[in-house]
Length: 594
Image 1: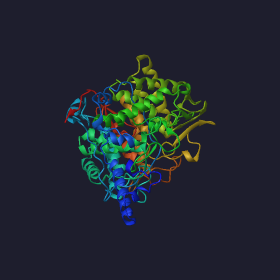
Image 2: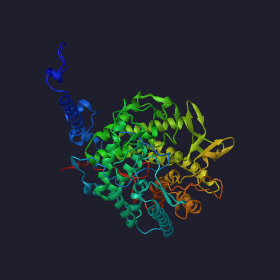
Image 3: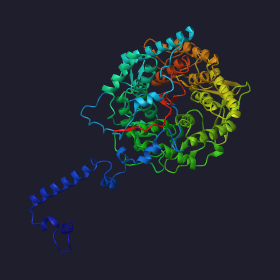
Image 4: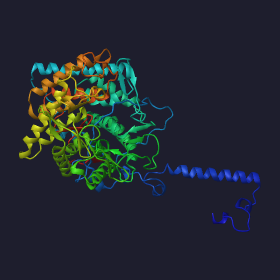
């Protein structure tokens, strides 16, 4: 190129080569094409290419992972770095599910290690579906009723909305929505493990076939990182661990790679929204990241590293833990909004309901999933619960214990339906607390679960509102029209299930059966189940939406409530915040080299 550089007193380099005008044009055309070809080829280089790293953000691959990092990524012993959790507060649907014609196949995720599935299954302490000894006929009849409800919900989805994200049961059509970035079939993926556990074999095969033939990951659109992770990644991982079917694992790993650009921020705290179809040049959007979203990735991402042999997933969520440990916590509490640019809190709003909830859930479950080796997660959970109890747990004049919200030191005496998972979470943590604290936390869990039950019992439909308050003489009831709806949420029956398994107090099964009857009476319609707009009227208006989490969570937790304890035993499994079971790592076995 030095020879072609224009020098003072000399003509330009095309003229210097003695080229005529048409030849100059052809030469320039050839040169521009060559440059375009070279630049385009840059994107086709292997991820490990040193030349590519000079121009594009580095993207870790399985092949570049060192053996020492693979050890760190193992679930059984993440050092003391892992990451928190989240629940769900939005309802929705999505976009695109049939295979995109002409779309190039997604890059295959190649794992350098082979996960030893048979060895994993032998490591479980209980059969996945239990041993089903002789049982009480009434309990079995109630469980069979819940199984029938699941079949009814699935059959109508299959008939009217298969491939869409959710069923609209009143209009008998499908809903796509804009939450999943073009992905479709949210109900299919969410329902897989529930169908399997309930032994709905034909329906499970229908769902599996759809995933094999029609679940297209070559989509282009903005998706919620949180929702894609808990519903799709969680659902696919659970289906793989329950069945060993490779299609579920390969889809989970391929989709997991599409989520990695969300972490391209100055702090590594991921953005809440990611485009699943476009190349990411790094962080380029303003706004805050939400605690319950970036804090609810840890369980799934550790399993992605476990199955792929690629430590990048584990590294991403472990970095979240580091950022949270560095930042100062007001009164020991975790506010709901964090800047992914500075790593500082944006405002001091603390909630155990929406925006905060599953962060705390994933702390205790990270510890349990590591077979109680992740001591940092346990300490973070214990410290957070201590601060919550000190500053947020209150008792009403009528004696109901609830968890208020905290806004810069001022309490808002309300509790959302989403916060009702906390009874089960606290009970789960109490089971592993020191002897002097165990009974205290079990009592607290029981009191909170009772308060959430009261929010159901005090409504005309015996279903709970989206939020309920403790002010102006009102207790455990919604006082605003915008909080009176019920969208088939699972959090209350989730706590019933945990409380039953940890205490075997029969009232929790009775309370669960009351929910079953209320769902049948007020939410079952001709073509599925629908949420209702007002729980305080016996003739409610339906919202025409059968949420995917109704099949993933609400019906699963109700079914497990009437199962023996060895069905998806808590010794072997933890549930992600969408109720997808992920295995506890008992054995610390290494995957076999291929």
